Length: 460
Image 1 (cartoon, rainbow, N blue to C red):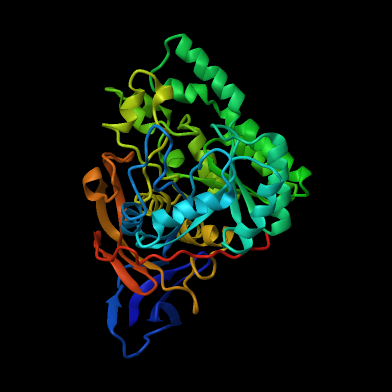
Image 2 (image 1 turned 90 degrees about the vertical axis):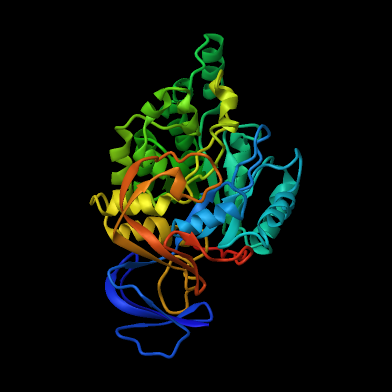
């Protein structure tokens, strides 16, 4: 199978130029001006931006949180991703049974994803407890399974202690991997949650009040210091939501620490006023960390523009408002945490970031496609338009006006957090390894086309 994408404006993390792309057997074979090749398909991209397929390195498909299961599995979730211009994901595996080894969840997640995903995918390892067997097993996961990143949590049921976090940071540095962390101060959160419930303060607005910015920022600072103690071990902060945490991160980065940062669209476009919506609709936005006061948004945008924030991912974790979220209608602490967003990321960042001049189009490509691929060992196979890379390509029509509503999306959930937003520009074609799987918001691919990617270790 061969194809040419002609007449488009090609955009990478560093360049913007007119050109044609010749694709053969799923790989980019040639890039040039007015290419003349015999091929099976010619795609006219006149008036369109041609970008690398989006890479979303923070999703939660098939996630079982005990009281509910995420509404998107690896089929519906990757269909939605593709329709939104994302061609590869790295999913954060959920917790397994108490005391299970690291391979347990890897095997469970292959069962979830293999022969179901429609785009390419990988997993982050998850650490629930730390002992010598787990630390030894990490080598097999990194080197044999191709999973060189692990997530730890500083809150929730399987939170790790500071000693355990230090051991993980040291071990992954030794193995050439990277530690990703959900940073929140567990004891402070639990204290406030109990206090508010005892006082009868159980409406959604008490969710952000029980997880103030200081809880997140303190945990970020603590992990930065532990990473320093571990010999400047590489550290990746997931879903940064606030300016105070970013200040600690900048201090560490300026001193030469290997601290990498992700934020999400919800923290760039939404704020804590959403928790006050009538009819308990504030439950839609219960996620951790929570939405913050609006003045944090400018700091996050500046962090993206200045390069302190490297990645925009989604933390896609969809629970139905009319079912799952209703568990919290009388007590916010009973509501499953998470918000959908796997399909909205690329359109939102293009319309609100590029078209409104918050960031350049090259920075948009960098944080949504190239930098996440580089960060987690997928580059240059993914996140790039260059000879030898996979032909994962998205066409964006900058003149397409779209009102973002649940009805136009493919996520298997009954709401979008961005209902009614008017967008300028939208993906109109998604190609994965040379095959067009979405055209004009219609999925035309096939279940199981996606492949598991064994990721490479990188030099952080």
